[in-house]
Image (tube, rainbow, N blue to C red; front, top):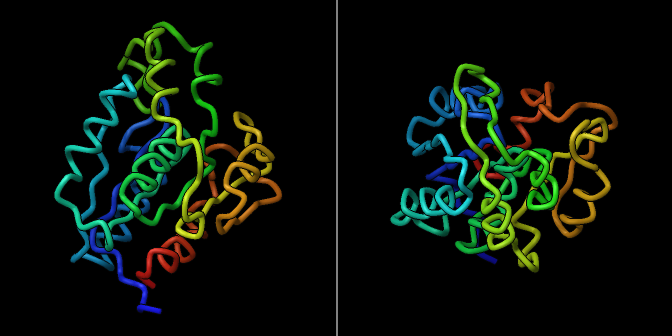
Length: 198
């Protein structure tokens, strides 16, 4: 058994209508900058098109080393994180991950506002639902590479669906909480330990 490798490259993927300004993204960015300045941190603004988002993620990480890269994804970002982690064999931390966004986001077709800047608008096109379907991971391989932090109090996603989807993964299931994981800061030590940074 080889020793677990410390993460050297870390990708953070935000959720639907969110941005790199999300509280969780900023909290992680601050911890990495302060305690692990040697780690390459990237938290891109994801385009509304899932196909374009996937292309951005793939291009931006094309030269990252597979054995020491990791991804953290929140909500829809958790869905994207699952896709890239399975493709590349990365470790992944999923925060209230979207399990079936093609189904859930079909009702959001049309103009949307950004969560952190209501002045910022984008259009969620009907074809984006099919693009989400195309990115769905049929089978979880190496679930031990995944840590899922799931709140039973999530008001948008069903915690039972999340725990079932990531059945073989390490899970932290919170009795309360919410979709935004307002108490995320207290779980950062667990995230760092899972990524071999603690």
